[in-house]
Image (cartoon, rainbow, N blue to C red; front, side, top):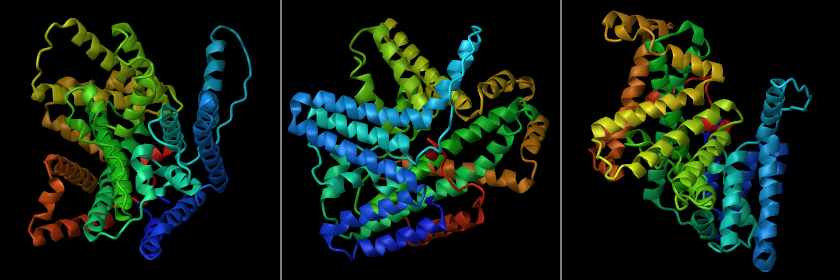
Length: 478
């Protein structure tokens, strides 16, 4: 059930009414049943897989506390089980095919099985969330959750099971143990955030996706400025699709009384690649930092080791996003850029202060260049874009060339061009307004007529610009 579907809206409306009627000490049980229905309604067989993960990790955490002398063994076995599942369902076919192709270059012909399973919903997310919980219990940072039902809800909580954010045990579990009381202001705030998330997804991301998908589906027909514009549009499509999911998930949870981690903090206002990763998919970047980068030595083992750790982490981050060489190169590119930043800072006695009017657009351009690998179907498609995106650059300033490019991109009608322009204006307005401190309070202080005009316009656009053929969120495939 996509958050933007009518089925989900009916599901959540019924849950909302029941949630505040049941006894407060049973709220978690209702949420657990709702989460089970949400997950099992997708692919029931994979609901059993999720149940297996919950059961094994629950008893592993309990065992680590009861028998601390064996906790390293318990942790290793359970992490091995979790990542073996991830490998089989997500990566086996990729590595099998890749190995066969590599050996073929050396005239070594072998045959390996390669099969592709339907990826279980949220597998990458709940695997990392469960692994983080187990490591925290192992380190003594948190106590193992004794209530199996509460723990099952922690892993399967329906707002975040599909695409995160990747929650931490010390943040979400204490909230799940508490009884929640209805709060009108929090409910309104949650509904506003949920609606904003739907607006980002349905109005902005999906309409940009129509153009992006069309051009990526027929790349040989496009060169020059059209490719640059497409990558620019995709940068906002992927951002508003994923941040739209996060806002919707956080809004749903807030209505029910829970606070989820914020996954984004204006990433395109970043002034360096390092700053970008402090703002983009924050729950994933901090997971890799806390559970992989720092245990590997972080930046404490010298420059060479720091760069090696960075490259390894970002290659794995790329693989986390998908079993494809495109994602490996996407992660490697970010790792190389961060390593270059480290080397530059190491050898410069005094790092010059770069004005934000230069560093901000430069960082954005580098991020957009990396998005080419992320969106392209194959490495050949990515290389095609890099080879041909600057073709005819001397004409980029010509109004006739720009108009011809836009006319080729927006082949359906002029309205499509206007819709994309409206989407970009809305995206920029949202970013600029939400960048201000206490933006929610500022919005609440707007005149009543203006606020309801914004609500009405947003709801109108949600219905008027809805793309029927695009329903799922982009990151659900990961």
